[in-house]
Image 1 (cartoon, rainbow, N blue to C red):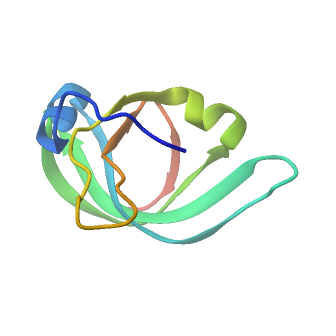
Image 2 (image 1 turned 90 degrees about the vertical axis):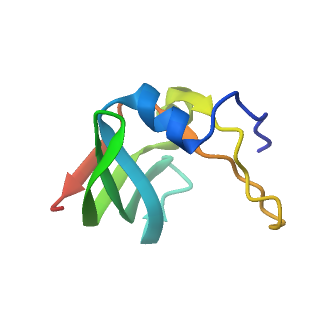
Length: 101
């Protein structure tokens, strides 16, 4: 999948989001190729008022690939250019998380 660069950096995406969760690391999971269902362990930060508020550890992101990618709202203009995998930051509409922070 190729993402066009958006108009904002990560700070701009967080400001637009207001409140939510910033995923900084995936820590395993699974995806069912037949149904499209997935569940991945994540770490990151809780965002409040467009700023990092607290760390999040051992939460799960789950859903279905059939609907998840339709919730992509915006891509950032910030891919790491020294990587062969140049992914920009991505901002999604409401997605399902579970676990403790």
